[in-house]
Every structure is written in C-alpha cells, then in structure tokens.
Amino acid sequence: MPHDIHNDTPAELSADEAALLREMPALSDVGHARRTFMMQTGGSGIGLFAANLLATESALAQLAPVSGAASAPVVAQNVVTINFRVNGAPHALDIDSRVVLLDALRERLALTGSKKGCDQGQCGACTVLVDGQRVLSCLTLAATLDGREVTTIEGLAKGDQLHPMQAAFIKHDGFQCGYCTSGQICSAVGMLGEAQRGQVSHVTENVGKTPTRLSDDEIKERMSGNICRCGAYPGIVAAIQDVHSGHQSAQTWGFATEAQLAMTTDEKKEDGHATV
Ligand code: FES
Ligand code: FES
Figure 1: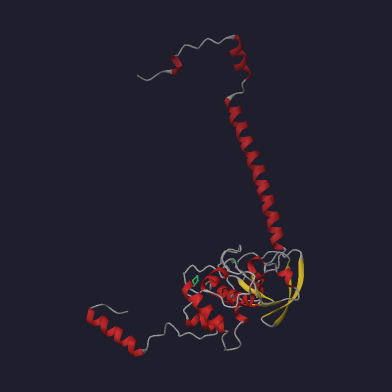
Figure 2: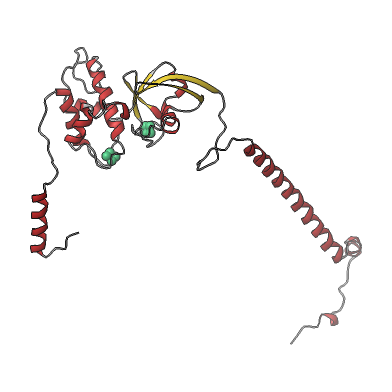
C-alpha cells in the first residue's frame, strides 16, 4: 500500500529542534550556494591550470626550434666549451656541463657506434677509449675531456683495414645481435693495453709479477664489465686471445658455398621439408 506522506502526523519538535529548523536556510538557497561554491572552486582551479599552461607555453616559445626534432628541445645550461679530438679529428663543442660523453658522441657528433645499454655504468655497451684507456662514456662528463683524445669504434679501423680486434671478433664469431660489440671491442683493446702496462686483476695469481700471458680466466675477469645478452662470450674470449697471443688461430666458421647451399636444399626436398 502506497505511503501517503501528507497524511503523516507532524512530528513533535523540541524547543531546540524548532530553533535549529528556523536557522536552517531554505532548500533553494542551499542549491544556489552549492552551485556558486562549485563554480568558484572550478573557476579558481581552471585559473591555476591556465596560468601554469601559459607559463609553460611561454617558456617553450622561447626555445629555438630544431628541424626534424622528435621532441621538444632542452635549453642548455651552464654551457662550457670543450676542445678535444675524436678519432683523430679536432672538435670544439659548446655543451651543457651535465652532458655525458656518450650523448655528446651520439647526439652532437653523430657517432652512433657507441651504444646506450643501461645508461648507468652496468653493461659496458658505451665503452670508448680516452687517451688509450677504456672508460664508460655514459658516466663520463664531456666537460672533463678538454684537450683529451677520444677513440670510438668508428676510429679503430684504418680506412678499409679493420683493427686486429675487429677482425678477430669476426673470425671467432664473437657476436650475435652486435649491440654490445662496439663496447666489447673498445674494452678489449683498452684491456690489453692495461695488461701490457703490468696492471693486475682480481684473478692474477702472483700480483708481484707482471702478467705477460693472459689466461682465459684473466680475460673473462678483466672483461667482466662488458655484458653480452646474446651470450657470445666463448667467441669474445677466443677473439681476444687471438690478438693477445699474436697466434692467428684458424677461423672456426665460414659462409656456406653455393654448392653447400644447393646440397642442403636438395636434401630438404628429399625429406619432404618445405624450403624458404
Ligand atoms: Fe654505459 Fe651501460 S650504457 S655502462
Ligand atoms: Fe648481442 Fe652481445 S652480441 S648483446
């Protein structure tokens, strides 16, 4: 049965309740006040947002546009000028004092052979040589290199003549995807220089004696800062041993000849395997 509200007997109010009821605003006033409050709040919020947006746009508008830039350019701060040599060529760069060598090489000099793996000194993909010593370019401030000589993977070969370490990596199949390879090769070149200068490692048996012949364990330890996600380590160690020993060991792999490829294709046809 529907409840008829108009037939309800008015509730009896105490004196306090009656006084409170008289002080309360009418419902229409409450709605108006609420709407006014919401509009004022929203207005001030949007005002703040708009002010921030305008400030941001005004800051961005002051930046010089860069043709072909994929993202908004960043204003350089604390600019320093460095004069250094990279792969034998002199360079003068006006550079933000916070820029690391890896970014300077890749973004300013278009030398993209050095790779950015972890960007925090953990993988070795960015290894280059500074005055012949291996450094992690992602942890080296470019501003510290005034007057220094930097060698990257692009500078190891002499024209068409590969550096012996590059040739050995190819010969021993010391890579798969190749992402770590430039760092591995630069690191290996720097590492052999360290060994020649008599530096010992954690696994050197007699630290009082200059190691003249590096064992595989020595090479693995000294190269442990260069990670290879493809796991090409056996080939990497073999390549470094090749250069270190000076003994040209036989290449362990070769491209298939036309005849071998044709034979493989024929065998697959006989097996009923589809060829691609
Ligand atoms: Fe420099 Fe990984 S990118 S160590
Ligand atoms: Fe792929 Fe080393 S060859 S990470």
